Amino acid sequence: MKHLARKSFLLGLAAVLLATPLVSNAQEEPESTRVITVQTFDVPRTEWDSFFDYVDEYVMPNVKANPHVLSYRLARHYYGSNGQQIWVIEEYADLAALQQSQEWNENRVAEQYAEGSSEAAARDEAEQKYWLPYFQKHKDEILMVGESRMK
Image 1: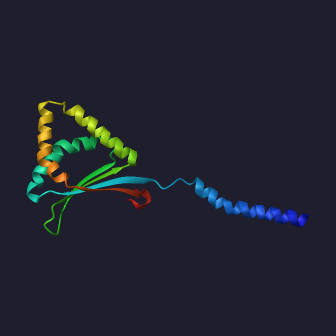
Image 2: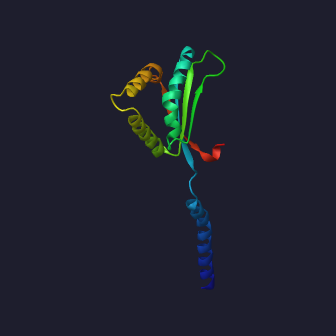
Image 3: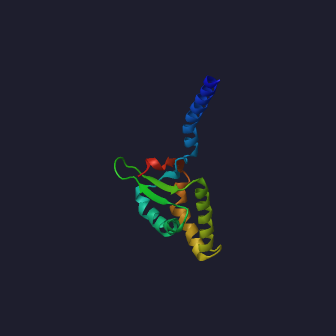
């Protein structure tokens, strides 16, 4: 009887010891991640000054004020072939923040540029001329990045 009790005790102890890593792993928080969006499109180099003027006037003020955007980069081709590529790189806490960012921006633009106003007309005209011709052919990616692999 002592042998059976001892064997049961050892089997029970072994089960507890084997289950301990599973329990501690289950209690660990999953790795924190960020969502990165990358949009790529071409803008002829001869149009870069006008394109970036549009961005500086109409895009950047809202991006900088948007509480859902963790980081924003607008990169352009620097060296090599006669590249015309522009990259818009944005970072968000998660997919919900990405959606909230878009809604926030739409609301902000609606507040800034009242429908029918001359400011709204000027913004729309600039967007038609300096943004949409290039952006309509964009490619985009939505990426997930583990913070343990970020600097």
